[in-house]
Amino acid sequence: KQEVTQIPAALSVPEGENLVLNCSFTDSAIYNLQWFRQDPGKGLTSLLLIQSSQREQTSGRLNASLDKSSGRSTLYIAASQPGDSATYLCAVYMDSNYQLIWGAGTKLIIKP
Amino acid sequence: DAGVIQSPRHEVTEMGQEVTLRCKPISGHNSLFWYRQTMMRGLELLIYFNNNVPIDDSGMPEDRFSAKMPNASFSTLKIQPSEPRDSAVYFCASSLGGLAAQETQYFGPGTRLLVL
Image (cartoon, rainbow over all chains, first blue to last red; front, side, top):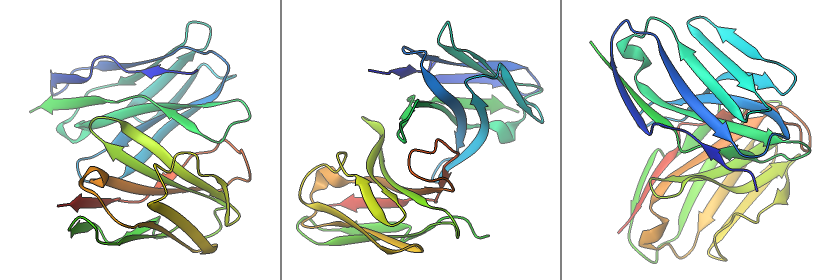
């Protein structure tokens, strides 16, 4: 059974720092991995989707990497801003399965 | 596009009452998902529709929960009777793809339900 883990559960850093969020999964037979952002009281917004054949995806200050063999993904945020404060969740699709398997999320606070 | 629309945004009700949550998916999307989010259990998939047909309702907690999708632009999730342990945020999400297409899901803003 696939399990997705995100450590730490919470992270607080000063504005301007580069930071890395971690996501690990137990079964490497994933179809793709997605990173989402959730702001308080709001829904989830998809940030990046990495197919299993890809190593990384970039969008603006965000870069997500994927290492299937080791069961790990990272979300790199460059030059962090207070507006980046949110909970970040990763989720994986397994092959031939419509159900996303979710991590519990990392709550990120960027201090001005 | 306005994105996924959910109503109401907040619902406070008393135990035993019927609650109906509504969702309008993004136009043209073929898949619709209902999720529940709590601090203790995180995000849980309740039910998945594809082309208006329920494909998997194994996540529905019990018979008190029911969901319908009468057409491609509308879905409801009903709880009858409601209980305090149903208090959670309920999300609706939609995606473009067909059955088992592993594509990005677009989430609505959620309905925050409190059952007293």
